[in-house]
Amino acid sequence: MEKVMDNGKTPRVIISGGGTGGHIFPAVSIANAIKELRPDAEILFVGAEGRMEMQRVPDAGYRIIGLPIAGFDRKHLWKNFAVLVKIARSQWKARSIIKEFKPDIAVGVGGFASGPTLKTASMMGIPTLLQEQNSYAGVTNKLLAKKAAKICVAYEGMEKFFPADKIIMTGNPVRQNLLAHQYSKAEALQAFGFTDTKKTILILGGSLGARTINQTLMGAIETIKANPDIQFIWQTGKIYIDEIRQQLQGKEIPNLFVTDFIKEMDKAYVAADLVISRAGAGSISEFCLLEKPVILVPSPNVAEDHQTKNALALANKDAAIYVKDAEAQEKLMPVALETVKDDTKLASLQKNIAKLALPDSANIIAKEVLKLIGK
Image (cartoon, rainbow, N blue to C red):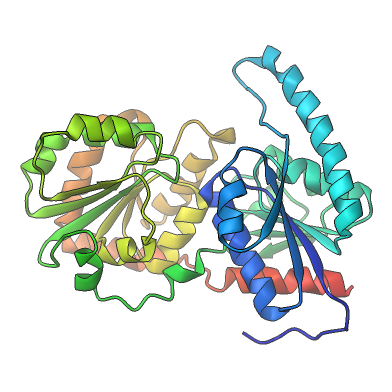
């Protein structure tokens, strides 16, 4: 990666957002790409107190400050008075962070904290750049877009949400270590106690877990045992692991590996012939770049049902299989077993999803950030 021209001024960048791994991994990738282009850059993250970015960002070597922000409760509107108070407090705190840090630019990656941080930055005359990961723009980004200098997107047709002259098609940044691996399939499978003579299905519920996917797997334990020629790597998410371990106690299932969180995701991806996953934008970008056949089960519990729209964007191009959350218990396992045994179908999914990959996203976004500072 080439270095960017140094005008003698240290770039100071705030990156704000989080809430899930899908927001945090791209944010850290952008920070890493900025540091590679400008090693002298000062980067400060602004997240939401109590959310996973408060641990994951320091783990990646960056400083983070939390805002007392929370999302709106769409089901119980009377509870939102407390949320409005938190938003006001977050804007005050964001103002003092910006006054103290003096950023040249604020970058929003989505998630609770990006709203007050970027709104306050705009009001204080600091240029902002948005990264919209989904095929359907969230409310926060639609509001912030009016003042943003640039909006980096991962899907076509985003002019229906944002001013066309501000949009740059960059794709979503992914975890860099996923692309740098040097493992053979046999080595990757060994990490899970498996052999490379059998087909392997990787089940991902996101960093926190996916209730429907987990319940479907629990209900299919006898089916898993009845298919010893298929291996299953199951990431349950930390919320569900204790309950699942309890239910599996005393059951000998040699073709099933269960864990709450997979640290070596690069190995898990190399090991997998087929992936079952929610349809978060960050995960989809990883599947595209790694050319992984995937069954997408969109979460119905997200704003504007954006995961369904993400899934359909792929399914309509025969680049993924789409199973509705409401139909997962009935359809997911039969579809997965049928697909993993069909080499022609796997090859077709792999070829079509590879066409949608947008490599080098983090570097392209980092260059835009530095370009805006240069202006």
